[in-house]
Amino acid sequence: DADVTQTPRNRITKTGKRIMLECSQTKGHDRMYWYRQDPGLGLRLIYYSFDVKDINKGEISDGYSVSRQAQAKFSLSLESAIPNQTALYFCATSSDRGNTEAFFGQGTRLTVV
Amino acid sequence: TQLLEQSPQFLSIQEGENLTVYCNSSSVFSSLQWYRQEPGEGPVLLVTVVTGGEVKKLKRLTFQFGDARKDSSLHITAAQPGDTGLYLCAGLPGSNYKLTFGKGTLLTVNP
Image (cartoon, rainbow over all chains, first blue to last red; front, side, top):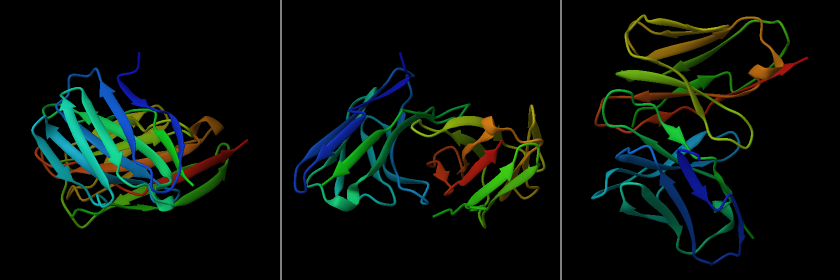
């Protein structure tokens, strides 16, 4: 099984709909992240959480919200999806000590029509 | 906000050629990481450099961290089609900070 699992892998939704992307990890890491990737723009940070009680906005948080339900689970919601939120979304985890390597899920390809 | 500038943004070369990609910032990082991403997959860590001036080698890939810990380079010798992918650098300003990614260099190695 993958260390970081994202569901769904692909999703097409209509403008105005609420959608939730889920992420779970088996690494035992405290730190979790949600990134968005658009062609030519690399990875942009949406939200991050350093532990269950900690939620922080990233550089592009408008239109998104998150919930850290447990150490292993971090979900991303689009309250009212719009077409320019069409992108590839990645969840990642990292440790807060020693090796700071980020482990990524396989991504969720979201299309808003 | 610590910004990482990667160059070039796109690079298309022939098999067997050498190449260097760069990651530059005006900020100091406690460590810098290089990731490679293949289509349809998440990025995967290649190396972490933590000491100014450090050089690490991974087969045909050579990574260097600048003396001032503000920049890094990745050199690939005798590139192969399997090296094709998006190369991302990521910097960590300190242990209590979030990882910041550059926009990446998209490398295509043609047979």
